[in-house]
Length: 191
Image 1 (tube, rainbow, N blue to C red):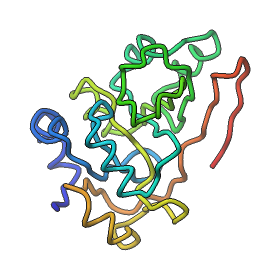
Image 2 (image 1 turned 120 degrees about the vertical axis):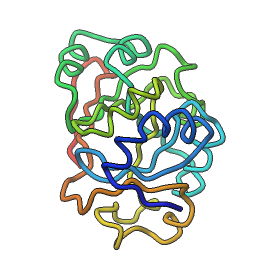
Image 3 (image 1 turned 45 degrees about the horizontal axis):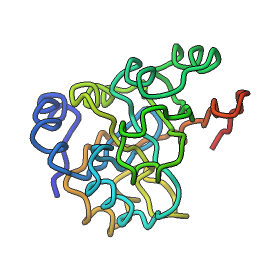
Image 4 (image 1 turned 45 degrees about the vertical axis):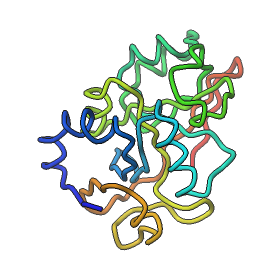
């Protein structure tokens, strides 16, 4: 397992997408809020690996969308959803109805008709954009444990289970706000 710096990752962004992530790599990545555990959200094997690593076998995962266009192409966009999409990038996870069931692996959201989508206000969003595919983003922790803010508090099992880590120092954020846009009204949940 290799720890990459922000600078190394920016230089290798194209290679990360083409050579590593598309082959099924599972990795830890920074966002505008906290560190996430990620992979190509369309790769069944990689998504299953994240489920095993986290011991999370029931709840859906959110994704970093490669673009706002990807969101509008693959999700149901209501008037309210359009207003929230315009606020991206930002510290929000938009819970939306998924209209293209093949946009992500069935293991990403277990075939439910919703998906959580993010575009973090962070340079890592460019990796998803370069890949042209959604990237799973879920907190880098085991179920019911604290989320990762530094390498020091990363669960050793998770650390040994990932292919690489993109590390940029301590994070002082909280998980993104959940904005439910799938129930006919907007509901916001802070975490």
